[in-house]
Every structure is written in C-alpha cells, then in structure tokens.
Length: 173
Image (cartoon, rainbow, N blue to C red; front, top):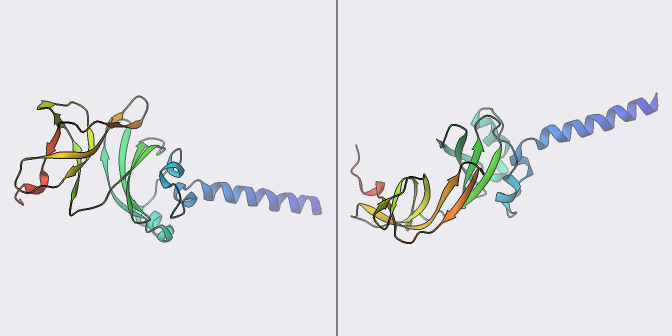
C-alpha cells in the first residue's frame, strides 16, 4: 500500500512538472540567454493576458504578430525589458528561431517588409532595424534578417546598400 502511494506521489510530481514546463516562458530567467531558452519551446494557445499575467516576473508583454507565410508567424514580445521576434509554426505554435532586436526609439526604427539593395527591389520579407532620419523617404539599415522558410530560421543579411521605406516620415491618416 505504501509503495502505491509513493508511486502516485512521484508520478504526480513528474506530470505536474512536465505540464508546467510546457509553457516555454516558464524556463526563462532575466539575465539568462533568453533566445536560446525559447527555441524549441511552445507558446500556449490561450489568451495573451493570461500568459502575460502568469509571467509578470519577466515583464512579459505581447507586442503583436505578423503572418509571414502559410505556416509561419512572427511573434513580437517584450521579455525582461528587451524586444524579441519569435519565428513560430502556426499549427504547432513551436518556436523555431528568435532574434533580439535593439530598442532605441531615438536612433532606431523597426521595420518588416520589402527593401531595396543598391536600388534593386528584394523579393524576400526583411526584418530590419533602420537608422532613424527625418525628412527622407527611405532609411538605411542598421541590421537585417530574412526568413529561410524551409529551415524556419532567421538569416542575418548584409545591410550594405539596403534602404527601406521610412514609415515614420509619413503624415498621420
């Protein structure tokens, strides 16, 4: 009888830990290598406010999502005071890759879309951090990534000659 009770206690302990660990944000601690901890994890399919509330200690804040392709999403999150873009599988909500993006709104602007390189239009979707300038139609890129849809990863790309539309200079609607 005692063996059965101990077995049940141990089993419930392991089951409880595995269900708790299935929330990828539970594995993160501020000051750790957050990007590496997120890759391979899953974002639970539940209300964002519940996820954020459960992880107040991380200052977790969902900043939105972009549809990248039939199977991929880009999820934008603030974690421990830093911004991250998570490349997620739409069906499984598995995180395939993560990039941390600098957050300096006085000098830099985030951008997602098509850009030109040496005045030639690029067909790939580009995630870029642009150098902020007033009064110009396009901005130079500080850093940039494209998505390799087959491998489901962000690939750092050269910013040499890259210019992207300056949405900050457009007049408000």
